[in-house]
Length: 137
Image (cartoon, rainbow, N blue to C red; front, side, top):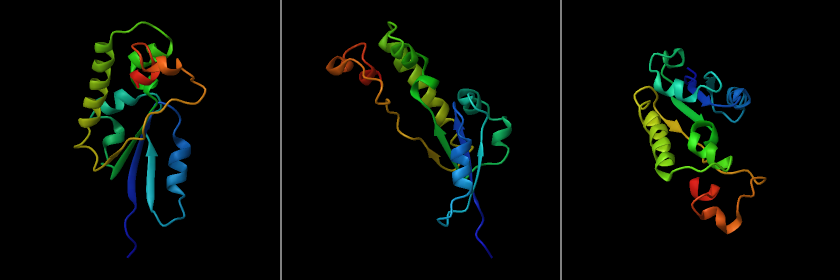
């Protein structure tokens, strides 16, 4: 009897269909059935336990986001807007709480690390100052 496929749910604010395709067609021996949550609905998916993506409990969930896609205060930092550090912390806490809340809907959670792309040069050493991207990230 062949082992059962592992089920995977991919949640992202961008198109993650390619990732699901790679997981579904992996020839390394991993037998994965990946499906993708509605694009650009990360918080809605995380916060709604009745959403259709949760009808079948996935063995693991990948939450693949860019910080500016789920943390409005970080998006403001990238626009060089003035923000209060407390607002950034509150936004991050809301996002983290939403992730913790899905622990009863999935067996494992995988969260790729946030980084900034090389073309976001920032402010050099000043990037670690109050208005810097590196500090906010």
